[in-house]
Image (cartoon, rainbow over all chains, first blue to last red; front, top):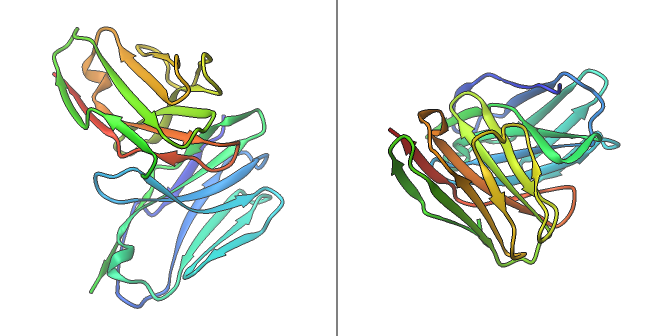
Length: 113
Length: 111
């Protein structure tokens, strides 16, 4: 069974710092990997989607990388801002069931002004 | 969360009571999903539907039933609520096999 782990569970950084969030998965046979943002009391918003054949995706200050062979993905946030404070979740899909996401438990990020 | 609405937003039930959560979409997507989110466990898939009139079990289906009688609505039912079903429930929709769009969630407490 695919297991997704995110470390650390919480992270607090000063504004302006570049930071990296980590996601690891146990089965390298993935279909895609997605990073989501969740604000308190809200649903999830998709940030970046990486297909299994891709190595990275970028959107603004966000860059997500994927290393299937090692079962790792990182989300890089450049020049962090207080508005980036949220919980970030990664999720993978596997070819055996394209409808099922395996979610990590998230990293709660606090960017201090 | 544009395009996906969930009703109700909050609910408190007593053990053994029943209720139905409604997910409605206005994006005409084929795929609809119900997840639960518990502290420290991420989101887990309860049931999903790949089109009107179809449903399938996810990772944690026990104690829940679903129906997709209309394409735009996906109902999640609890026939006899248990304290273990205290959670935040999210509905999601998708046009294909890639991204999903999530609703704002329903916070359910079972006493």
